[in-house]
Length: 147
Length: 191
Image: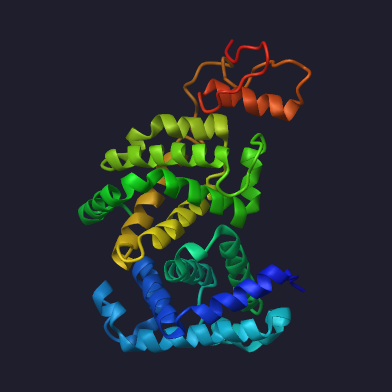
């Protein structure tokens, strides 16, 4: 089981209360699709992803960004048992969506960068450490059901 | 994933904005790397203070960004331009190249904070590619038959026995390569 310090719990809750969830998910996902274009392979049904402008304005990307943030909120509500809470999500990603799990880290890095940009200087090294630990745990939980 | 002409243009243009703040960016990126990826602290065990924003961290952040500035100037041939730095990292510092990626990530995080509007996805991808190319150039000499002559290597120093072995070896070769000005009392750093 992952141990969270009081600082980490408080910090992560605080981050999610401050960020604009409608914007962050979309921004992180579009950044991922632009910066790591091979990740587009999983979004064949999303229509026009031909260039950065198309990706940034794509409504399906925006909608899916919200889905991703919703997933993170589920982890937030189950911080003491993220692995358990993510069992079905992990099966979904491994068996149905067949996403290469290395891609989870790429999206996590983009999330970190977008949140950093959103929060500015209040995203201190200590806050970054707590947030990245949270994302590491989420990624590990998503990877859990892969064989 | 080599740099296109457009990538180079974006990197150079962004660098003109970044250059005046480079020292602060370097210090912040290094602070974050040490705080968020504590395993990286192993390379700096000889520093008195590894906390974010400490004096050694600030100084070294400046050194690192000096290297990045150099790379921007040599963007058309990073491998050739960074040969000396690659030798330094390969034979003397022996930094595991996986850490270059970690530092690069933290540089990008700082850029997102300092330049929230200019650090667009297009700038992000160009810089990510550039830092990746820089890292590859730094790793160039890692598994390379060395043409350097036999152990007049910097690491074969004999500092006074009163200093612990690990501190001796790390301080001495750092002094030798001009990174660390500290020498032990009464011992010269070069043989």
